[in-house]
View 1 (cartoon, rainbow, N blue to C red):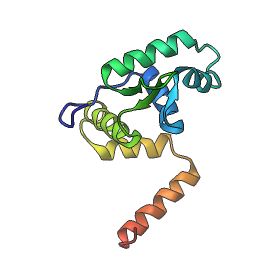
View 2: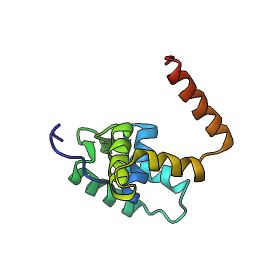
View 3: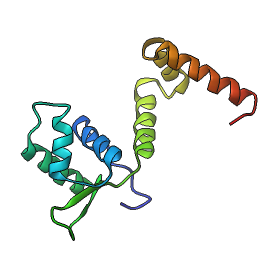
View 4: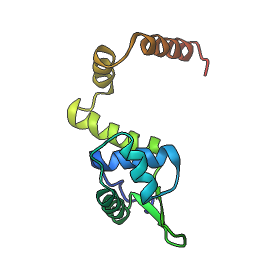
Length: 130
């Protein structure tokens, strides 16, 4: 994928497979299926293989064809894809306001322990600490 072309937006199903590849590194289709099947009993090997092939075609995955079975690998780092998706979400759902996103997340989706950790990070940032 060229540095100037936008990232293809992965679907929810594609994100599941990307998450597995980010977590484990390059895998063949059977290993991706095995990892997904631990989470989803309805997973099908044929569907996983087809999805990996489609993702390769979209430019989301690279494929090492010199090995058998072929190994698939995410083209972009997890953080880059998450940042791109988050930017899109902020623009579409929160009218471009990162603050609105953060406040919604803090109100609805953050545990007390996570909230304390976030407060600590913010205090350290204000104090000039990394």
